Amino acid sequence: MLDSNKQTGFTAMATRLNKLRSAMPVSLNIDLAPGSKLATLMRAWLLSLVGLIVFALLWQGAANNIDTSLGKFPGPQEVLEQSKNLYSEYQRDQQNERDFFARQEARNADRLASDPDADVSIRPYTGRPTFVDQIGTSLLTVAFGFVIAMIVAIPLGIFCGLSQAVYSAINPIVQIFKPVSPLAWLPLVTMVVSALYVTESTLFSKSFITSGVTVALCCLWPTVINTTVGVAGVDKDLINVSRVIRLPPLQHVKKIVLPSAIPMIFTGMRLSLATGWMVLIAAEMLAQSPGLGKFIWDEFQNGSSDSMGRIMVAVLVIGILGFILDKLMLMVQRYVSWDKTNTLR
Amino acid sequence: MQNYLELSNVGIEFKTNNVPFKALDQVNLKVSKGEYISLIGHSGCGKSTILNIVAGLYQATEGGVILEGRQVDSPSPDRAVVFQNHALLPWLTVYDNVALAVKQVFKGKKSRAEMHDWITHNLELVHMTDARDKRPHEISGGMKQRVGIARGLAMEPKVLLMDEPFGALDALTRAHLQEEVMRIHATLNNTVIMITHDVDEAVLLSDKIVMMTVGPSATIGEVLHVELPRPRDRLALAKDADYNNYRQAVLRFLYDGHQATH
Image (tube, rainbow over all chains, first blue to last red; front, side):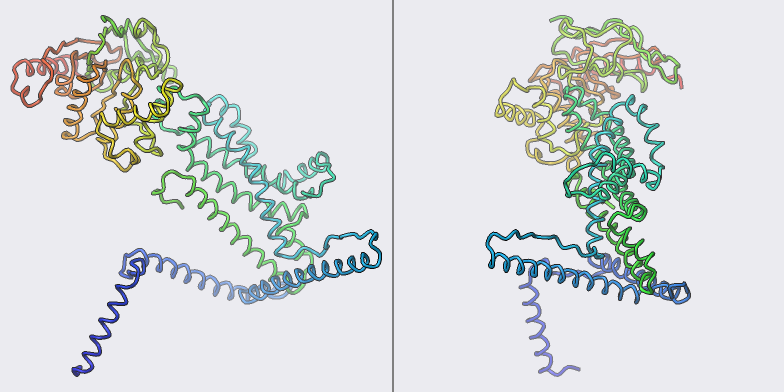
Protein backbone atom coordinates (compact mmCIF):
# COMPACT_ATOMS: atom_id res chain seq x y z
CA MET A 1 0.00 0.00 0.00
CA LEU A 2 1.22 3.48 -0.81
CA ASP A 3 0.71 6.13 1.85
CA SER A 4 -0.84 9.38 0.68
CA ASN A 5 2.41 11.29 0.82
CA LYS A 6 4.19 8.86 -1.39
CA GLN A 7 1.25 8.75 -3.72
CA THR A 8 1.19 12.52 -4.22
CA GLY A 9 4.91 12.39 -4.82
CA PHE A 10 4.31 9.71 -7.41
CA THR A 11 1.54 11.65 -9.16
CA ALA A 12 3.66 14.78 -9.15
CA MET A 13 6.46 12.90 -10.82
CA ALA A 14 4.08 11.43 -13.36
CA THR A 15 2.74 14.90 -14.22
CA ARG A 16 6.25 16.20 -14.58
CA LEU A 17 7.13 13.28 -16.80
CA ASN A 18 4.07 13.87 -18.92
CA LYS A 19 4.96 17.54 -19.27
CA LEU A 20 8.44 16.58 -20.30
CA ARG A 21 7.10 14.14 -22.84
CA SER A 22 4.70 16.68 -24.37
CA ALA A 23 7.56 19.16 -24.56
CA MET A 24 9.56 16.68 -26.61
CA PRO A 25 9.36 16.90 -30.34
CA VAL A 26 7.06 14.36 -31.92
CA SER A 27 9.88 12.58 -33.66
CA LEU A 28 11.22 11.50 -30.29
CA ASN A 29 8.03 9.62 -29.60
CA ILE A 30 9.66 6.24 -29.53
CA ASP A 31 7.40 3.34 -30.28
CA LEU A 32 8.83 0.05 -29.13
CA ALA A 33 5.73 -2.05 -29.55
CA PRO A 34 6.33 -5.30 -31.41
CA GLY A 35 5.85 -4.81 -35.14
CA SER A 36 6.72 -1.11 -35.03
CA LYS A 37 9.37 0.15 -37.40
CA LEU A 38 11.99 0.71 -34.73
CA ALA A 39 11.36 -2.64 -33.08
CA THR A 40 11.80 -4.41 -36.42
CA LEU A 41 14.98 -2.49 -37.08
CA MET A 42 16.41 -3.27 -33.66
CA ARG A 43 15.53 -6.91 -34.10
CA ALA A 44 17.37 -6.97 -37.39
CA TRP A 45 20.42 -5.32 -35.84
CA LEU A 46 20.36 -7.70 -32.91
CA LEU A 47 20.18 -10.72 -35.19
CA SER A 48 23.09 -9.51 -37.30
CA LEU A 49 25.07 -8.98 -34.12
CA VAL A 50 24.28 -12.50 -32.93
CA GLY A 51 25.34 -13.83 -36.34
CA LEU A 52 28.64 -11.96 -36.16
CA ILE A 53 29.40 -13.14 -32.63
CA VAL A 54 28.68 -16.76 -33.50
CA PHE A 55 30.88 -16.44 -36.56
CA ALA A 56 33.71 -14.92 -34.51
CA LEU A 57 33.51 -17.78 -31.98
CA LEU A 58 33.54 -20.45 -34.68
CA TRP A 59 36.41 -18.67 -36.39
CA GLN A 60 38.41 -18.51 -33.16
CA GLY A 61 37.73 -22.17 -32.51
CA ALA A 62 38.77 -23.21 -35.98
CA ALA A 63 41.82 -20.92 -35.97
CA ASN A 64 43.16 -22.52 -32.78
CA ASN A 65 43.15 -25.90 -34.48
CA ILE A 66 44.93 -24.91 -37.68
CA ASP A 67 48.69 -25.01 -37.47
CA THR A 68 50.77 -23.81 -40.39
CA SER A 69 54.46 -23.26 -40.98
CA LEU A 70 53.86 -19.64 -40.08
CA GLY A 71 52.19 -20.47 -36.79
CA LYS A 72 48.54 -20.68 -35.91
CA PHE A 73 45.87 -19.41 -38.25
CA PRO A 74 44.92 -15.88 -37.16
CA GLY A 75 41.79 -15.58 -35.06
CA PRO A 76 39.73 -12.44 -34.47
CA GLN A 77 42.04 -11.33 -31.65
CA GLU A 78 45.13 -11.51 -33.84
CA VAL A 79 43.37 -9.73 -36.69
CA LEU A 80 42.31 -6.89 -34.44
CA GLU A 81 45.88 -6.50 -33.25
CA GLN A 82 47.29 -6.51 -36.77
CA SER A 83 44.76 -3.95 -37.94
CA LYS A 84 45.91 -1.69 -35.12
CA ASN A 85 49.52 -2.31 -36.16
CA LEU A 86 48.75 -1.50 -39.77
CA TYR A 87 47.07 1.70 -38.77
CA SER A 88 49.92 2.82 -36.52
CA GLU A 89 52.36 2.01 -39.33
CA TYR A 90 50.33 4.35 -41.49
CA GLN A 91 50.44 7.06 -38.84
CA ARG A 92 54.18 6.61 -38.40
CA ASP A 93 54.64 6.91 -42.14
CA GLN A 94 52.55 10.08 -42.21
CA GLN A 95 54.77 11.50 -39.48
CA ASN A 96 57.88 10.49 -41.44
CA GLU A 97 56.54 12.23 -44.48
CA ARG A 98 55.84 15.42 -42.58
CA ASP A 99 59.31 15.27 -41.01
CA PHE A 100 60.90 14.69 -44.40
CA PHE A 101 59.26 17.74 -45.91
CA ALA A 102 60.01 19.84 -42.86
CA ARG A 103 63.69 18.86 -43.08
CA GLN A 104 63.77 19.53 -46.78
CA GLU A 105 62.18 22.93 -46.36
CA ALA A 106 64.54 23.87 -43.57
CA ARG A 107 67.52 22.76 -45.65
CA ASN A 108 66.34 24.70 -48.66
CA ALA A 109 65.63 27.79 -46.57
CA ASP A 110 69.14 27.55 -45.14
CA ARG A 111 70.72 27.33 -48.57
CA LEU A 112 68.64 30.21 -49.87
CA ALA A 113 69.62 32.29 -46.85
CA SER A 114 73.30 31.78 -47.49
CA ASP A 115 73.05 32.09 -51.25
CA PRO A 116 69.85 33.62 -52.76
CA ASP A 117 70.71 32.17 -56.18
CA ALA A 118 71.11 28.60 -54.96
CA ASP A 119 69.41 25.97 -57.07
CA VAL A 120 67.07 24.35 -54.54
CA SER A 121 65.22 21.22 -55.42
CA ILE A 122 62.06 19.82 -53.94
CA ARG A 123 62.12 16.06 -53.85
CA PRO A 124 59.07 13.88 -53.39
CA TYR A 125 58.79 11.59 -50.37
CA THR A 126 59.61 8.03 -51.32
CA GLY A 127 58.39 5.92 -48.43
CA ARG A 128 57.07 2.41 -49.01
CA PRO A 129 53.27 2.53 -49.54
CA THR A 130 51.41 1.56 -46.38
CA PHE A 131 48.25 -0.51 -46.11
CA VAL A 132 46.07 2.60 -46.16
CA ASP A 133 47.83 3.85 -49.32
CA GLN A 134 47.22 0.48 -50.95
CA ILE A 135 43.50 0.71 -50.14
CA GLY A 136 43.40 4.14 -51.77
CA THR A 137 45.17 2.88 -54.90
CA SER A 138 42.83 -0.09 -55.20
CA LEU A 139 39.73 2.07 -54.89
CA LEU A 140 41.06 4.52 -57.46
CA THR A 141 41.93 1.72 -59.88
CA VAL A 142 38.55 0.02 -59.60
CA ALA A 143 36.82 3.37 -60.07
CA PHE A 144 38.89 4.02 -63.20
CA GLY A 145 38.16 0.59 -64.70
CA PHE A 146 34.49 0.74 -63.75
CA VAL A 147 33.96 4.17 -65.31
CA ILE A 148 35.62 3.10 -68.58
CA ALA A 149 33.51 -0.06 -68.64
CA MET A 150 30.28 1.86 -68.05
CA ILE A 151 31.05 4.43 -70.75
CA VAL A 152 31.21 1.53 -73.19
CA ALA A 153 28.68 -0.87 -71.69
CA ILE A 154 25.61 1.33 -71.21
CA PRO A 155 25.44 2.76 -74.76
CA LEU A 156 26.29 -0.68 -76.18
CA GLY A 157 23.50 -2.24 -74.12
CA ILE A 158 21.05 0.42 -75.26
CA PHE A 159 21.88 -0.25 -78.93
CA CYS A 160 21.54 -4.00 -78.40
CA GLY A 161 18.21 -3.56 -76.65
CA LEU A 162 16.82 -1.20 -79.29
CA SER A 163 17.83 -3.19 -82.34
CA GLN A 164 17.47 -6.90 -82.81
CA ALA A 165 20.06 -6.72 -85.58
CA VAL A 166 22.70 -5.12 -83.36
CA TYR A 167 21.87 -7.63 -80.65
CA SER A 168 22.31 -10.57 -83.00
CA ALA A 169 25.62 -9.15 -84.16
CA ILE A 170 27.02 -8.49 -80.71
CA ASN A 171 25.56 -11.31 -78.65
CA PRO A 172 28.08 -14.00 -79.73
CA ILE A 173 30.96 -11.68 -78.83
CA VAL A 174 29.46 -10.99 -75.42
CA GLN A 175 28.85 -14.67 -74.79
CA ILE A 176 32.43 -15.59 -75.73
CA PHE A 177 34.19 -12.93 -73.69
CA LYS A 178 31.91 -12.98 -70.66
CA PRO A 179 33.39 -16.12 -69.06
CA VAL A 180 37.03 -15.13 -69.63
CA SER A 181 39.04 -14.88 -66.45
CA PRO A 182 40.87 -11.62 -65.79
CA LEU A 183 44.11 -13.52 -65.43
CA ALA A 184 43.89 -14.58 -69.06
CA TRP A 185 43.58 -10.99 -70.18
CA LEU A 186 46.28 -9.65 -67.94
CA PRO A 187 49.43 -10.59 -69.90
CA LEU A 188 47.93 -9.27 -73.10
CA VAL A 189 46.77 -6.05 -71.48
CA THR A 190 50.20 -5.59 -69.91
CA MET A 191 51.94 -5.95 -73.28
CA VAL A 192 49.51 -3.65 -75.05
CA VAL A 193 49.68 -0.99 -72.35
CA SER A 194 53.49 -1.05 -72.34
CA ALA A 195 53.48 -0.69 -76.11
CA LEU A 196 50.85 2.01 -76.43
CA TYR A 197 51.01 4.00 -73.21
CA VAL A 198 54.23 5.92 -73.78
CA THR A 199 54.13 9.22 -72.02
CA GLU A 200 56.30 11.45 -69.89
CA SER A 201 53.40 12.22 -67.59
CA THR A 202 53.50 10.56 -64.20
CA LEU A 203 49.80 11.11 -63.60
CA PHE A 204 48.93 7.46 -64.17
CA SER A 205 51.47 4.70 -63.79
CA LYS A 206 51.52 1.86 -66.30
CA SER A 207 50.47 -0.66 -63.67
CA PHE A 208 47.48 1.51 -62.83
CA ILE A 209 46.36 1.54 -66.45
CA THR A 210 46.95 -2.20 -66.82
CA SER A 211 44.89 -3.13 -63.76
CA GLY A 212 42.22 -0.59 -64.68
CA VAL A 213 41.83 -1.92 -68.21
CA THR A 214 41.72 -5.52 -66.98
CA VAL A 215 38.98 -4.56 -64.54
CA ALA A 216 37.11 -2.78 -67.33
CA LEU A 217 37.31 -5.80 -69.66
CA CYS A 218 35.81 -8.03 -67.01
CA CYS A 219 33.13 -5.79 -65.60
CA LEU A 220 31.76 -4.74 -68.97
CA TRP A 221 29.51 -7.73 -69.47
CA PRO A 222 26.94 -7.73 -66.67
CA THR A 223 26.02 -4.15 -67.53
CA VAL A 224 25.83 -4.83 -71.27
CA ILE A 225 23.56 -7.82 -70.70
CA ASN A 226 21.29 -6.21 -68.11
CA THR A 227 20.98 -2.97 -70.06
CA THR A 228 20.05 -4.95 -73.16
CA VAL A 229 17.37 -6.88 -71.29
CA GLY A 230 16.06 -3.71 -69.64
CA VAL A 231 15.88 -1.77 -72.89
CA ALA A 232 14.34 -4.64 -74.84
CA GLY A 233 11.72 -5.04 -72.13
CA VAL A 234 10.23 -1.56 -72.31
CA ASP A 235 6.43 -1.75 -72.26
CA LYS A 236 5.10 -2.09 -75.82
CA ASP A 237 2.33 0.44 -75.14
CA LEU A 238 4.87 3.06 -74.08
CA ILE A 239 6.82 2.47 -77.29
CA ASN A 240 3.58 2.90 -79.23
CA VAL A 241 2.92 6.17 -77.41
CA SER A 242 6.35 7.32 -78.50
CA ARG A 243 5.63 6.27 -82.11
CA VAL A 244 2.25 8.02 -82.17
CA ILE A 245 3.67 11.32 -80.97
CA ARG A 246 6.70 10.76 -83.23
CA LEU A 247 9.46 11.24 -80.69
CA PRO A 248 12.82 11.49 -82.46
CA PRO A 249 15.23 8.62 -81.62
CA LEU A 250 17.31 10.51 -79.07
CA GLN A 251 14.23 11.81 -77.27
CA HIS A 252 12.73 8.33 -77.40
CA VAL A 253 15.77 6.94 -75.59
CA LYS A 254 15.85 9.79 -73.10
CA LYS A 255 12.16 10.04 -72.27
CA ILE A 256 10.91 6.48 -72.65
CA VAL A 257 13.72 3.92 -72.78
CA LEU A 258 16.13 5.11 -70.11
CA PRO A 259 13.58 5.70 -67.33
CA SER A 260 12.07 2.28 -68.04
CA ALA A 261 15.40 0.51 -68.07
CA ILE A 262 17.01 2.28 -65.10
CA PRO A 263 16.37 -0.52 -62.58
CA MET A 264 17.89 -3.15 -64.88
CA ILE A 265 20.83 -0.91 -65.77
CA PHE A 266 21.60 -0.44 -62.10
CA THR A 267 21.33 -4.14 -61.40
CA GLY A 268 23.93 -4.61 -64.13
CA MET A 269 26.14 -1.85 -62.77
CA ARG A 270 26.10 -3.32 -59.29
CA LEU A 271 27.04 -6.74 -60.62
CA SER A 272 29.78 -5.09 -62.67
CA LEU A 273 31.21 -3.22 -59.74
CA ALA A 274 31.28 -6.38 -57.62
CA THR A 275 32.99 -8.27 -60.44
CA GLY A 276 35.43 -5.41 -60.95
CA TRP A 277 36.39 -5.38 -57.29
CA MET A 278 37.06 -9.13 -57.30
CA VAL A 279 38.99 -8.95 -60.56
CA LEU A 280 41.09 -6.06 -59.32
CA ILE A 281 42.53 -7.95 -56.36
CA ALA A 282 43.52 -10.86 -58.58
CA ALA A 283 44.99 -8.54 -61.20
CA GLU A 284 47.03 -6.67 -58.62
CA MET A 285 48.41 -9.90 -57.19
CA LEU A 286 49.49 -11.20 -60.55
CA ALA A 287 50.63 -7.92 -62.10
CA GLN A 288 52.42 -6.70 -58.98
CA SER A 289 50.71 -3.37 -59.45
CA PRO A 290 50.17 -1.39 -56.26
CA GLY A 291 47.00 -2.06 -54.33
CA LEU A 292 45.48 -4.49 -51.87
CA GLY A 293 46.31 -7.48 -54.07
CA LYS A 294 49.97 -6.61 -54.04
CA PHE A 295 49.83 -6.06 -50.30
CA ILE A 296 48.54 -9.60 -49.83
CA TRP A 297 51.12 -11.07 -52.17
CA ASP A 298 53.95 -9.18 -50.48
CA GLU A 299 52.83 -10.38 -47.07
CA PHE A 300 52.64 -13.93 -48.38
CA GLN A 301 56.18 -13.70 -49.77
CA ASN A 302 57.35 -12.03 -46.59
CA GLY A 303 56.23 -14.97 -44.48
CA SER A 304 56.72 -13.50 -41.01
CA SER A 305 54.69 -14.68 -38.04
CA ASP A 306 52.42 -11.63 -38.51
CA SER A 307 51.82 -12.21 -42.20
CA MET A 308 48.72 -14.35 -41.97
CA GLY A 309 47.10 -11.93 -39.55
CA ARG A 310 47.87 -9.04 -41.87
CA ILE A 311 46.49 -10.91 -44.88
CA MET A 312 43.34 -11.66 -42.93
CA VAL A 313 42.97 -7.94 -42.21
CA ALA A 314 43.20 -7.30 -45.95
CA VAL A 315 40.61 -9.99 -46.64
CA LEU A 316 38.16 -8.35 -44.25
CA VAL A 317 38.89 -4.89 -45.60
CA ILE A 318 38.27 -6.12 -49.16
CA GLY A 319 34.94 -7.57 -48.06
CA ILE A 320 33.85 -4.48 -46.17
CA LEU A 321 34.86 -2.14 -48.99
CA GLY A 322 33.00 -4.30 -51.52
CA PHE A 323 29.94 -4.07 -49.31
CA ILE A 324 30.29 -0.29 -49.02
CA LEU A 325 30.74 0.07 -52.79
CA ASP A 326 27.50 -1.83 -53.36
CA LYS A 327 25.68 0.36 -50.83
CA LEU A 328 27.02 3.45 -52.59
CA MET A 329 25.64 2.20 -55.90
CA LEU A 330 22.33 1.56 -54.20
CA MET A 331 22.30 5.14 -52.93
CA VAL A 332 22.98 6.44 -56.42
CA GLN A 333 20.19 4.22 -57.74
CA ARG A 334 17.77 5.59 -55.16
CA TYR A 335 18.72 9.10 -56.16
CA VAL A 336 18.34 8.47 -59.89
CA SER A 337 15.29 6.18 -59.77
CA TRP A 338 11.88 7.74 -60.35
CA ASP A 339 10.08 5.13 -58.30
CA LYS A 340 10.95 6.09 -54.72
CA THR A 341 8.44 3.66 -53.28
CA ASN A 342 10.15 0.66 -54.79
CA THR A 343 12.17 -1.23 -52.19
CA LEU A 344 15.69 -1.74 -53.44
CA ARG A 345 17.95 -4.47 -52.18
CA MET B 1 -17.42 15.87 -95.70
CA GLN B 2 -18.23 12.38 -96.92
CA ASN B 3 -15.47 9.79 -96.64
CA TYR B 4 -13.29 11.65 -94.20
CA LEU B 5 -11.62 8.37 -93.36
CA GLU B 6 -11.78 5.35 -95.60
CA LEU B 7 -10.59 1.79 -95.22
CA SER B 8 -10.62 -0.01 -98.54
CA ASN B 9 -10.06 -3.74 -98.94
CA VAL B 10 -7.85 -3.80 -95.88
CA GLY B 11 -6.30 -7.18 -95.15
CA ILE B 12 -3.40 -8.23 -92.97
CA GLU B 13 -1.42 -11.42 -92.71
CA PHE B 14 0.80 -12.25 -89.77
CA LYS B 15 3.56 -14.78 -89.90
CA THR B 16 4.01 -16.78 -86.76
CA ASN B 17 6.80 -19.36 -87.06
CA ASN B 18 6.56 -18.92 -90.82
CA VAL B 19 2.94 -20.03 -90.84
CA PRO B 20 0.90 -17.30 -92.46
CA PHE B 21 -2.21 -16.29 -90.58
CA LYS B 22 -4.74 -14.03 -92.22
CA ALA B 23 -6.24 -11.95 -89.43
CA LEU B 24 -8.27 -9.51 -91.52
CA ASP B 25 -9.66 -9.75 -95.02
CA GLN B 26 -11.54 -7.27 -97.21
CA VAL B 27 -12.36 -4.71 -94.54
CA ASN B 28 -14.21 -1.77 -96.06
CA LEU B 29 -15.39 1.16 -93.97
CA LYS B 30 -16.27 4.77 -94.62
CA VAL B 31 -16.29 7.28 -91.79
CA SER B 32 -17.59 10.85 -91.98
CA LYS B 33 -16.13 13.72 -90.03
CA GLY B 34 -17.48 13.98 -86.50
CA GLU B 35 -18.83 10.44 -86.47
CA TYR B 36 -18.57 8.23 -83.44
CA ILE B 37 -17.85 4.66 -84.54
CA SER B 38 -17.78 1.58 -82.35
CA LEU B 39 -16.10 -1.65 -83.35
CA ILE B 40 -17.67 -4.64 -81.64
CA GLY B 41 -17.02 -8.33 -81.97
CA HIS B 42 -15.78 -11.38 -80.15
CA SER B 43 -12.30 -11.47 -78.63
CA GLY B 44 -9.60 -12.17 -81.15
CA CYS B 45 -11.67 -11.07 -84.15
CA GLY B 46 -9.17 -8.41 -85.12
CA LYS B 47 -10.78 -5.26 -83.74
CA SER B 48 -7.51 -4.08 -82.24
CA THR B 49 -5.74 -4.98 -85.46
CA ILE B 50 -8.02 -2.65 -87.42
CA LEU B 51 -7.39 0.11 -84.90
CA ASN B 52 -3.64 -0.44 -85.07
CA ILE B 53 -3.73 -0.31 -88.86
CA VAL B 54 -5.62 3.00 -88.77
CA ALA B 55 -3.12 4.24 -86.19
CA GLY B 56 -0.27 3.23 -88.49
CA LEU B 57 1.24 0.99 -85.85
CA TYR B 58 0.60 -2.03 -88.14
CA GLN B 59 0.96 -2.05 -91.89
CA ALA B 60 -1.89 -3.58 -93.87
CA THR B 61 -0.64 -6.24 -96.26
CA GLU B 62 -3.55 -5.57 -98.62
CA GLY B 63 -5.55 -2.46 -99.33
CA GLY B 64 -5.05 0.69 -97.35
CA VAL B 65 -6.36 3.49 -95.19
CA ILE B 66 -6.99 6.98 -96.50
CA LEU B 67 -7.47 9.94 -94.19
CA GLU B 68 -8.48 13.27 -95.76
CA GLY B 69 -7.26 12.10 -99.14
CA ARG B 70 -3.88 10.89 -97.91
CA GLN B 71 -2.74 7.35 -97.41
CA VAL B 72 -1.84 6.35 -93.88
CA ASP B 73 1.50 4.56 -93.68
CA SER B 74 2.98 5.44 -90.28
CA PRO B 75 1.86 6.50 -86.82
CA SER B 76 1.12 10.16 -86.33
CA PRO B 77 -0.54 12.42 -83.76
CA ASP B 78 -3.21 12.87 -86.46
CA ARG B 79 -4.55 9.60 -85.22
CA ALA B 80 -4.08 9.71 -81.46
CA VAL B 81 -4.52 6.44 -79.59
CA VAL B 82 -6.05 5.98 -76.16
CA PHE B 83 -4.73 2.65 -74.95
CA GLN B 84 -6.68 0.09 -72.99
CA ASN B 85 -4.16 0.14 -70.15
CA HIS B 86 -3.76 3.92 -70.25
CA ALA B 87 -0.05 3.65 -71.19
CA LEU B 88 0.93 6.66 -69.10
CA LEU B 89 4.61 7.04 -68.36
CA PRO B 90 4.83 6.11 -64.67
CA TRP B 91 7.76 8.45 -64.00
CA LEU B 92 5.92 11.55 -65.20
CA THR B 93 3.17 13.49 -63.47
CA VAL B 94 -0.29 13.79 -64.97
CA TYR B 95 0.63 17.21 -66.34
CA ASP B 96 3.96 16.04 -67.75
CA ASN B 97 2.37 13.05 -69.44
CA VAL B 98 0.12 15.35 -71.41
CA ALA B 99 2.95 17.86 -71.81
CA LEU B 100 5.24 15.26 -73.40
CA ALA B 101 2.74 14.81 -76.23
CA VAL B 102 1.86 18.51 -76.54
CA LYS B 103 5.49 19.64 -76.64
CA GLN B 104 6.28 17.11 -79.34
CA VAL B 105 3.18 17.73 -81.47
CA PHE B 106 3.10 21.53 -81.28
CA LYS B 107 6.87 22.13 -81.33
CA GLY B 108 7.37 25.41 -83.18
CA LYS B 109 3.63 25.98 -83.57
CA LYS B 110 2.69 27.10 -80.09
CA SER B 111 4.63 29.23 -77.60
CA ARG B 112 5.44 27.89 -74.15
CA ALA B 113 2.58 29.81 -72.59
CA GLU B 114 0.17 28.62 -75.26
CA MET B 115 1.27 25.03 -74.70
CA HIS B 116 0.74 25.40 -70.97
CA ASP B 117 -2.76 26.78 -71.54
CA TRP B 118 -3.54 24.00 -73.97
CA ILE B 119 -2.37 21.29 -71.53
CA THR B 120 -4.40 22.85 -68.73
CA HIS B 121 -7.43 23.17 -71.00
CA ASN B 122 -7.32 19.47 -71.89
CA LEU B 123 -6.89 18.45 -68.26
CA GLU B 124 -9.91 20.59 -67.44
CA LEU B 125 -11.88 18.85 -70.15
CA VAL B 126 -11.49 15.52 -68.33
CA HIS B 127 -11.66 17.11 -64.84
CA MET B 128 -8.09 16.23 -63.90
CA THR B 129 -6.68 19.66 -63.05
CA ASP B 130 -6.60 18.93 -59.33
CA ALA B 131 -4.41 15.88 -59.78
CA ARG B 132 -2.03 17.50 -62.25
CA ASP B 133 1.05 16.96 -60.07
CA LYS B 134 0.27 13.36 -59.17
CA ARG B 135 2.04 10.36 -60.65
CA PRO B 136 -0.02 7.63 -62.32
CA HIS B 137 0.42 5.20 -59.40
CA GLU B 138 -1.17 7.74 -57.06
CA ILE B 139 -4.46 7.99 -58.96
CA SER B 140 -7.27 5.52 -59.64
CA GLY B 141 -7.77 3.51 -62.81
CA GLY B 142 -10.57 5.77 -63.98
CA MET B 143 -8.43 8.85 -63.46
CA LYS B 144 -5.57 7.28 -65.40
CA GLN B 145 -7.91 6.64 -68.29
CA ARG B 146 -9.07 10.27 -68.15
CA VAL B 147 -5.46 11.40 -68.43
CA GLY B 148 -5.00 9.00 -71.34
CA ILE B 149 -8.01 10.59 -73.05
CA ALA B 150 -6.71 14.10 -72.26
CA ARG B 151 -3.37 13.16 -73.82
CA GLY B 152 -5.15 11.86 -76.91
CA LEU B 153 -7.36 14.94 -77.23
CA ALA B 154 -4.41 17.26 -76.63
CA MET B 155 -2.80 16.05 -79.86
CA GLU B 156 -5.76 17.61 -81.69
CA PRO B 157 -6.17 14.43 -83.73
CA LYS B 158 -8.24 14.14 -86.88
CA VAL B 159 -9.39 10.79 -85.56
CA LEU B 160 -9.27 9.70 -81.94
CA LEU B 161 -8.71 5.95 -81.65
CA MET B 162 -9.77 4.31 -78.40
CA ASP B 163 -8.89 0.68 -77.69
CA GLU B 164 -11.40 -0.54 -75.11
CA PRO B 165 -10.89 2.63 -73.12
CA PHE B 166 -13.26 1.62 -70.33
CA GLY B 167 -12.61 -2.12 -70.38
CA ALA B 168 -10.55 -2.21 -67.21
CA LEU B 169 -12.88 -0.02 -65.14
CA ASP B 170 -15.67 -0.83 -62.71
CA ALA B 171 -19.26 -0.29 -63.87
CA LEU B 172 -19.86 3.03 -62.11
CA THR B 173 -16.61 4.61 -63.20
CA ARG B 174 -17.25 3.34 -66.70
CA ALA B 175 -20.72 4.92 -66.80
CA HIS B 176 -19.28 8.17 -65.54
CA LEU B 177 -16.53 8.24 -68.13
CA GLN B 178 -19.00 7.38 -70.90
CA GLU B 179 -20.94 10.50 -69.98
CA GLU B 180 -17.75 12.53 -70.12
CA VAL B 181 -16.83 11.17 -73.52
CA MET B 182 -20.32 11.98 -74.83
CA ARG B 183 -20.03 15.50 -73.46
CA ILE B 184 -16.58 15.98 -74.99
CA HIS B 185 -17.76 14.54 -78.31
CA ALA B 186 -20.72 16.96 -78.28
CA THR B 187 -18.38 19.90 -77.60
CA LEU B 188 -15.53 19.09 -79.97
CA ASN B 189 -17.47 17.08 -82.54
CA ASN B 190 -14.36 14.97 -83.11
CA THR B 191 -14.18 11.79 -85.11
CA VAL B 192 -13.82 8.76 -82.87
CA ILE B 193 -13.27 5.07 -83.45
CA MET B 194 -13.71 3.02 -80.31
CA ILE B 195 -13.31 -0.68 -79.67
CA THR B 196 -15.70 -2.17 -77.16
CA HIS B 197 -17.06 -5.43 -75.83
CA ASP B 198 -20.02 -3.78 -74.22
CA VAL B 199 -23.27 -3.69 -76.23
CA ASP B 200 -24.86 -0.95 -74.08
CA GLU B 201 -21.78 1.19 -74.40
CA ALA B 202 -21.75 0.78 -78.16
CA VAL B 203 -25.42 1.75 -78.57
CA LEU B 204 -25.23 4.62 -76.11
CA LEU B 205 -22.17 6.30 -77.59
CA SER B 206 -22.11 5.51 -81.28
CA ASP B 207 -23.48 6.86 -84.52
CA LYS B 208 -22.43 3.64 -86.22
CA ILE B 209 -21.77 0.24 -84.74
CA VAL B 210 -19.42 -1.86 -86.84
CA MET B 211 -19.90 -5.56 -86.09
CA MET B 212 -17.07 -7.91 -86.87
CA THR B 213 -17.26 -11.56 -87.88
CA VAL B 214 -15.14 -14.11 -86.11
CA GLY B 215 -11.63 -14.66 -87.50
CA PRO B 216 -9.50 -15.94 -89.09
CA SER B 217 -9.99 -13.71 -92.10
CA ALA B 218 -12.31 -11.58 -90.01
CA THR B 219 -14.19 -8.82 -91.72
CA ILE B 220 -17.08 -6.46 -91.16
CA GLY B 221 -20.33 -8.37 -90.85
CA GLU B 222 -22.87 -5.62 -90.45
CA VAL B 223 -22.93 -1.89 -89.83
CA LEU B 224 -25.72 -0.59 -87.64
CA HIS B 225 -26.67 3.09 -87.83
CA VAL B 226 -27.80 4.27 -84.43
CA GLU B 227 -30.18 7.14 -85.00
CA LEU B 228 -31.04 8.04 -81.44
CA PRO B 229 -31.22 11.79 -80.84
CA ARG B 230 -28.40 13.40 -78.85
CA PRO B 231 -27.83 14.22 -76.07
CA ARG B 232 -28.57 10.72 -74.93
CA ASP B 233 -29.55 9.88 -71.39
CA ARG B 234 -28.90 6.34 -70.26
CA LEU B 235 -31.78 6.24 -67.77
CA ALA B 236 -34.38 7.53 -70.22
CA LEU B 237 -33.06 5.25 -72.94
CA ALA B 238 -33.35 2.15 -70.78
CA LYS B 239 -37.09 2.12 -71.48
CA ASP B 240 -36.83 3.44 -75.04
CA ALA B 241 -38.08 0.99 -77.65
CA ASP B 242 -35.60 2.08 -80.34
CA TYR B 243 -32.70 1.78 -77.95
CA ASN B 244 -33.72 -1.74 -77.05
CA ASN B 245 -34.15 -2.66 -80.71
CA TYR B 246 -30.60 -1.49 -81.43
CA ARG B 247 -29.34 -3.48 -78.46
CA GLN B 248 -31.13 -6.59 -79.62
CA ALA B 249 -29.80 -6.18 -83.14
CA VAL B 250 -26.24 -6.12 -81.89
CA LEU B 251 -26.81 -8.99 -79.48
CA ARG B 252 -28.44 -11.06 -82.20
CA PHE B 253 -25.48 -10.49 -84.47
CA LEU B 254 -23.02 -11.48 -81.77
CA TYR B 255 -24.86 -14.57 -80.62
CA ASP B 256 -26.37 -15.80 -83.92
CA GLY B 257 -23.94 -17.49 -86.19
CA HIS B 258 -21.02 -15.25 -85.37
CA GLN B 259 -20.13 -16.93 -82.16
CA ALA B 260 -16.54 -17.93 -81.64
CA THR B 261 -16.09 -21.53 -82.72
CA HIS B 262 -14.10 -22.58 -79.66
